[in-house]
Length: 577
Image (cartoon, rainbow, N blue to C red):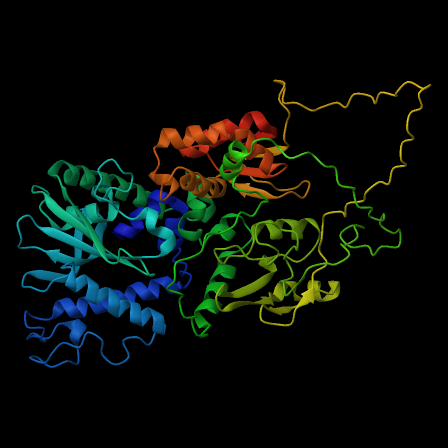
């Protein structure tokens, strides 16, 4: 058996995911961002393969096949950009020029480019890999790895700070390379050359560190232990018998695991293969990437900047006089209302969108589009569609992306059923807009009360009976938050929902702006958590009856947020394992 550094990382995240990829050999879903990195690596390799005068050496390396010795190296030969967009091609030229000017990539003898290695790890298991740049004759030896990254992944970049969880000296991949190609008795310099795939003011940058002998030897021993475990896992015959992830966070890592449908038993192995094959055969042109920085996303729940509100409260000399606007009278729903969603009438003006069959117009997660921001189908819409006997996304073959649009075609095994029920068999996001009737929230009906006659001098005023106020048991008013810790919302009243990480990200932007920092993560951990705790009542008031989903309490900031909102929650449910 042959294993690589990427396989080991996958195995660490989830044994089952590794088994499905490397033992069952399920194909990978095509990813557009991987194409950019592949083309960038090829250009860097061609540039570095030239001699000191920038000419083709003799013998000609494989990456310069077709070029003659002594000629100037063509870094961008004809057809080099055939698989990428014009914006991506221009960005690669800019990044390579910048990396050369800053001395991040260099030419010279003794540099092994795209160096392939295969070394024995334990009996019956070899360790393989490809190193971008290996300076095997330098003292100390150096290993460079070229990395491209998107705007949304900057917080995962490796750093030189040894106290950071992203310290490059702890990176599994570079440590594996070092342990595989060195004698493990000398320190080695490891370096990441980082290339942004967006208009980043910092441009190309590099981080490096010196890996000590004790780290190298310790990592080699850990690789051997994992190799024995991978060898045992390889002999398991059924995917259901392979251990899943230790944390459910692994299921959403890097945009979400491709095999979640298999683990959730909503997709078979054969169904997955067919779906990925359909994606691979889709030859539609990739959309040109937008190089401008992304705008801040708005919260999916109604809220305002709580810190700005508090600042405004301090400035105001006195609160404005309270006024009670007259409540509008809404006519009660007619008994002849159409029976949609179990007899609940749709609103007077339903939203008009070209939504897929499983989409729910009132879904706060996807705004009724049926797709999450990651490009995957909305799981909340699917749950509600299943609950209300509507088609789910699993009954369709869905292809496309957020930029170029989506198409959905019903699977053969569901064609007769959906035809008999009158649902569409094909859908195109670029088709004609239509009315979406799947509203599951009953319309609000205001009760018109008769005006209370004014009390006469002879009659004493009538006191209204006291209104019972629901509290949390400590005398504080419960705001209605439903908190789910280590579990998921499956069925119940239709309410807005948000994850703890989404809430932290959005509140963090407000908090950073309030405290004069660039981001929430730059703030002192204790100060930022204290500020969140101090504003817990205001945050809870803004959330109202929102469902707060907390996958786990491993993140200290998430645990602090839960502790702050716990007293203000009406329902708290924790999953036990």
